[in-house]
Image (cartoon, rainbow, N blue to C red; front, top):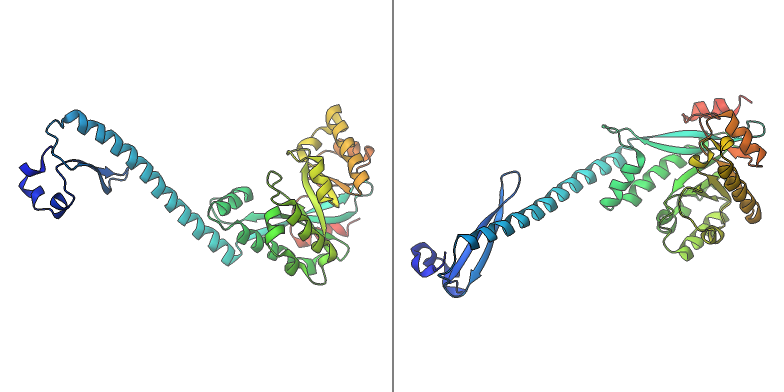
Length: 321
């Protein structure tokens, strides 16, 4: 509309005279689903007789770009709403399963403890890391993690008294999740908190303070997947873990790989120096177990030593030797 004065309808609109508007181009913002979100407008106080189809085409291009951005934001909001509802439903119903994988002495196959592994039942199946990534996206990660930890701790009375229970926990949960109040009870000395998400430990000072309180109750701290992620030895020294866990990628085929053996031996030497035990994860072959044992590594877990299962399976595995 190069000149609103020449359009009778335009002149009846209050905005035309109040603004005033002398010329305009207005393009509908049409989303991909066919709905119209609004209008993309360019206004001039003065008439612009030179407005032409080229100007209109430029505005259409910009309007389409804006509509794409708005549509993406709306779709993301809808996805977040769906994810939030799914996660809230899972937490309300405790709709996840806890499996226990034995942690075994490599010397005599004695079960020393178990790691709790969470599997979500909702369909279609999504791995735990995807559930927690979605929970992080909608601000529910700590709530979901706490729900899993609470259900895991409820298993302790049913486990053999000699076994320790290893629970995966993020540094953020250690710092801000009030774990002390969760574990303050008769089983606190049987708990191992396994630190995950090594890329973001947050405030090491706050982490140390919380770990100190957990240790006062008898809980232990483990560092997961050592050798797989970037985690400086200085950070490990500040954490002072009671247990370090060798990543399964290092363990796989270690009997055939001199470099993996050298790295594992170095980590074992380092763990000895800081007073930590070593647990090797992902052991699937006897040759791997034999090689790890020859390196002085005392404990392991993996399909060779015991598959994840329920409490009854762990009890049967514990008392079968």
